[in-house]
Image (cartoon, rainbow, N blue to C red):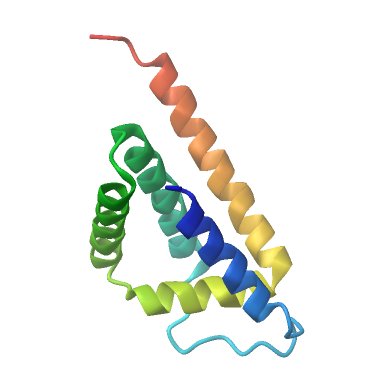
Length: 121
C-alpha cells in the first residue's frame, strides 16, 4: 500500500503524457535541470525506503512520506508542481527518463554498497 500511491502517480503521469509525440512536447517554464532532477529522484526513492522501514500504519506512513517530500522540495528550492511538470516532460522523452533512471539506479546501488561495507560500531 505504501508504494501504491507513488507508483500510481508515476503510471498516471506517463499515461497522461503518452499521447504527445516527444518532438511536440513543450518544456515547462519551470523545467528542473536533468542533474537536479536526478538528485531529486534519488531522494524520492530514499524517502520511500525510509518510510517502508518504519513499519508505520498506512495513513501515518503516507503522512511521513508527504512531509519528507515537502522537506525535499524545500531543500532543492523546487515546487512540487515544477517537479511533476518536469517529470512528465522527461517521461514524454523516454530516452531522457531512461538515461536519468539509469543514473538514479547507479547512485542507489553505490549507496547500498557503501552502507554494506561500512564498519559496524
